[in-house]
Image (cartoon, rainbow, N blue to C red; front, side):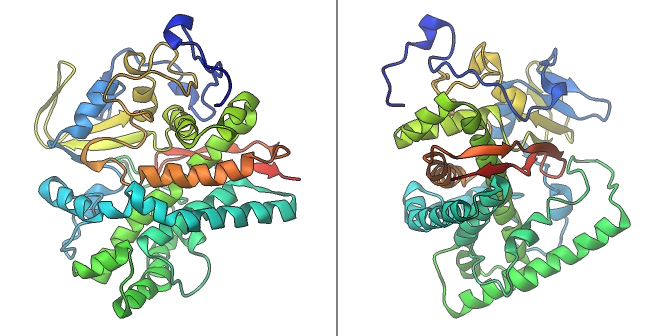
Length: 408
């Protein structure tokens, strides 16, 4: 973004960057905003579409984690330490405080040489081959970076990426109360996936760090006397969450940038803060996880309505991010200079909010930026085949596959 100064959005009534791209992944049934910011469906789930109501729920200590199999995991009596994704209150705050050092800007800067070297390797491989799937490149970047932070660097056999993706690519629906309709074959496959991940990836990492600690999450958990099972559950939550979501974001950001030459030019020639602003706005428009679930621990009053204790609340992130009261009348369009109210972050609720806000937000943007800039700086990088968009009911988000690009 090094061109002449842009007009103020208030004076033009639109995006000063003139991009105005629409979402590439939004489900057709979400194109029309619901009539009410809070709706109760026929299954008794309260669905929230309003930003302020959603943020209030996310920040409430009376609304606890209900997604990603929370009911099942929290019932495991042999876990002395619950995974950080499912803990609440003081225990959660202490766990987040203890592990925050792995995700600070200083810590992320320490990972930069590894991230940059990996990005150079991926771009070099693409240049030699001429063509490749961008979703494969983004998966390699996301998995390898997250593995460094978590400590999954001593696998007994290659294939960490495949083993990680097995946890989210199966059948099933993670919405609380949804009947498990998996086939017998799918259930048997899942019974093999976890032991395989433990035996080939987690256990070798634990053994290596018992011999010599390193500056990573597994070493920290060993210092806290976590059992192997407890470390496995943290690797599943920290690892797969960071790997799967970052993979999709890199792909969708590249799709927007390759489709819109002016946006691509602003991105490639911008400063780091300017590039990050573009990525944040793409993420606002294209949240990878579209639905966040909470369970009311007490009666909650939201928008003048009472959500009874025990109820499940589903927060529609696509709609909250496009709430005109927060993002403006052109909220369904891409605008990297979008003015937002004080206290509202650029991705809005794409990284969540409150105690369970994604701890790896800064890392995800940094690694995405490093790979995307190294790709997009090549003028002859082009789309050969646009990705197929499908929806994963396990993570409640989009998946982009077979995104074919060419270089050289």
